Length: 606
View 1 (cartoon, rainbow, N blue to C red):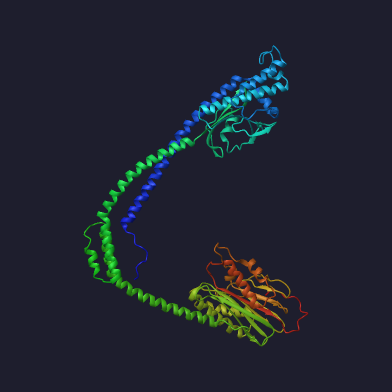
View 2: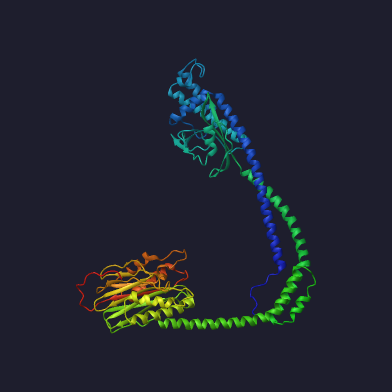
């Protein structure tokens, strides 16, 4: 026996690798659990922090009261008339002063909010005041963002669900207007209720939500919390706050790495101790047993059985393994002798099956054309067994100078019993046909003969037809067999269906049906066994009659040999690499006639 050329890896090395893998897995599991626990704790902490911040901003807006609502309504309808420069954050005083100047010019000796209210001002002053308040609130929200190390704070209100308008936009776009960069106001977007679940919960309930939304997008990994704003019993919008978890994740990951490093040190010491103990208590004994077994494999010396048995003095599984190997060595010689006899017997059976296969093949007509001197017809047939020998058969022979018999049959079962029954059935059918009589009479007599002593309860489906070559007239009997396909000249193949008789050898005394048919010059009959229509692919789908007819009509004018090859090619293409479970037998018969039947009427079923 040749040694495996691959490099051997010792058990000690494998145990070290196993413990190393265990250590890595333990560290990964520990790290994941630590990360999950700390993340959950921070999740709750973030929810509390965001709730407090949004509630504080909410209180500031509520204190503003109707003035905030007036500005919000103006913004909603006239944001395109407002102009806020991109560097305005924190500079709301300048906007306030600009508003005061215009207000004093328009309403001298009047005070805003006391003498004049928002709705009483002209549109120019309303725009100036709205600009001032928007910059003010952007400043307040920006200070909240910086003070509490948030990602964003902003104010939104629904327009038409799911669309929301960003009144205080955390990331506004800019555009150039009259040489200055200004914020693009009135930004709105559709916020999917499935993604922004807590946002819409807060708006519809009018209460702080039960949790917060989690986003991981181009703006970062954040938690978003919402606080609904109510002014004079009207819900006007949502204060929103997003907090980034990037820093917290970094801290959590750092803690996980520290913990994993400590765990790795503990595991390393434990692994070294365990490997040392295993090597001393178990591995050396296994290695010694392996050496003795290799010596036996190389020398085939049966005396090594005693050496292997005596080398182990323990009382554990390794001792039991040594004893079993020693017993196997003493029994191996007898086993090899038995194996040699079994192999010889299998070779003998294989040889006999090969002979049986050849005998069965020789029993079927295989020379084509079978009757080259006859010009009235063309004939071709094939049989491919699923096993070494099969139960299908076909036959054709001249009953007399003007009649030809066509037979296609399928014996139940597979293998040698079916093949023997096939030989008997084929012989009886041919001999009885040559004695004369109609197909029904022939099958009746053959049925009675096959039923005698049929303890194996085998049966055979048979399609038997006798055709008169001078006229094209024929008689056919179908004993439980497949329906034939018929093509009239210049037409297409189609299945000819009719009631079957029972299969042959099912019951003694059966009377079989038969029917007449007429073939015209150019007509073609195709008969087959169920191995064709029931050919199965890897998905257990059957080839079926529809695919069979399509294969026949792929080249309907082809000769009978090409016709059968086309069908077999389509079967092989359908089943691909799936195994063949049944014999596949086909017979094609094309009738040319004696040249005097051009005006004959259309024929019937075959």
